Length: 242
Ligand SMILES: [Cu+2]
Image 1 (cartoon, rainbow, N blue to C red):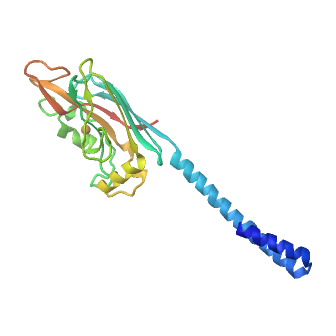
Image 2 (spheres, rainbow, N blue to C red; image 1 turned 90 degrees about the vertical axis):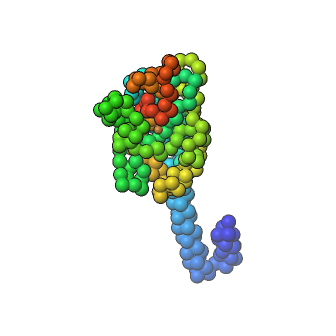
Image 3 (cartoon, rainbow, N blue to C red; image 1 turned 30 degrees about the vertical axis):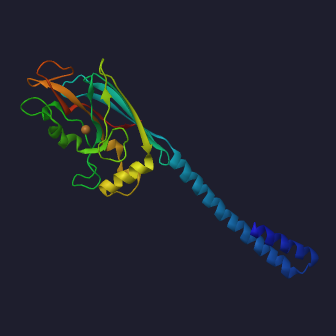
């Protein structure tokens, strides 16, 4: 605006006074104006590109297959944009009814000895002599908990996990939080850089827990003498980019 006013002022004085010197000044001013405009255009283009990147929705999925012969299967979908929400959806079946099922994104932290090592679902051979894969026996494969898939996602300490009601044992979970809040919480916990690179979803897995155990056998439903073990891993899926 200011520049426009200056230009029109100069134009007026050029009209009133047609000395060649003034024409030169006008030319110089116009030139400066055009170049400033170019710079601004470049900045605006950069802003538009950055904004588009921040708004881009990224999709990931994980096919959940049974651990401990639980029979639990399902699918998890994660989608997020940088300036929008981080959203997790899980549909699974075959879980113990009438029980709470902890579930997490597991992986190797971005700041530890095993920096972002690719987490995988443990093989059956990872189970000890008793044939049951305990939570700690799986840790060398899927790593510790990074993000609890609870009622609020952020903060990262475990909140309330989904309760699977009486019936077939279907789990349906859908939660979201602002991606920037998750990144901040994640980085506060793991000494990160506040960028999505720290999340490294493709190096993570999703694990669902909780089943009954009786006489060394994992079972979906309660029967007399069975004990519910909420930490027992029952399904796992490696997160992939969709
Ligand atoms: Cu877990």
